[in-house]
Length: 292
Length: 231
Image 1 (cartoon, chains in turn green, cyan):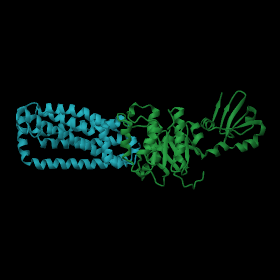
Image 2: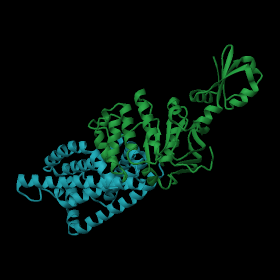
Image 3: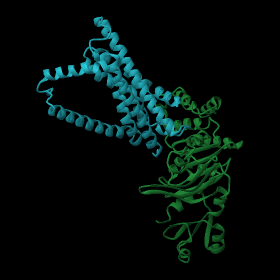
């Protein structure tokens, strides 16, 4: 993706150090009006990145521009224009959803009660029920309804679909797509359910061990990355770093390449080259080599 | 900031429904035993003042409020305001109850002892404010639970050191020990009260001024500590 893109969110060389873990030189851009999926295994640094964007953590280096503002210095202003859903939504358990929503609404001058009611109806939320009595899925739905009810220009979702049933996951993805139709909002969506991203994401960023593996448009990724299958004799002829990840079986191998065109050209008919899914890309890039 | 204070009040409503009637009864009953009344009032007012912190900790909602369009400075200021409002409400309610109960029981307007009067409540307020001034920076740095542990350690150390030093100074100057000679100790205390009483107004102003200064310094520390903290 172009570095000059004037995006809704720009992250450059972002660093955050913890004992035993570091987010190092994380860079990506979410263009206005698009959905970016942030994928990676647990502990890769997805939540840390999202918290840095919200200004909840202090960065050790790099730059963040969210809607043209720096969350480190203009945190409240940035957050007034961002809708967020944390991975574990927390609200007052003893209050009803309506009471919790009324508390949150007071903080947003742009709060739209009609939009909230619309989302609450669409998500089938029991507004008279206490938050503590909800299932995990309904808690996420409630947090999402709040995030979408104040005209947010950037929506940041941390694992919003984990714990949701397939029907609601589909509804949620449809809602997010609808949200983008008038290009009001951009969405940064962290998940480990890659099938969700294949449905709605325009851009994908893969993060692993605090480092960006790639950040590109989904179409480009699916075009460039491919799954290569062949006999072990082919593998012996290739340099060890030819593939991004290899799975060796008793009689053959499966491997991931980030240059499908070159693999087709160089390996020809000696192997079978298939379109890689996002799942394949994540699986092979996070486990570089494995044996049966 | 008022919205942050309001959410504390709304969140603590259930706690208030429990603490106010039970604490109120306790305070009313204890107003007949003034020294214990002081302890009851301090606990009651501390519960009302610090209760919202514990509600927040229990519900795990600190991250939520900091994810809204709120600055860390506003969050800190609101926490101090909620705490002060809670403590003032507790003390005012206690004073009203003590006055009403003792008036009904004995017909004496200002109760059976100075412990129940307005000046005593001002001193208790200053004491609570001082406790808040120490506890709140610890809360903003370490969280409610660990902050309380550090606070208790500091409070115990202060109590032990102050009492030991005071005893040593009094003994060195030839004053009686309250354990060895309670009667002489009582006479000494009465003499001290007689000396302090004419300057009570000045003394109370001084105490309130010190409490306000401690709160200001504490707020500045809390703000710096909380702004530097990762959530």
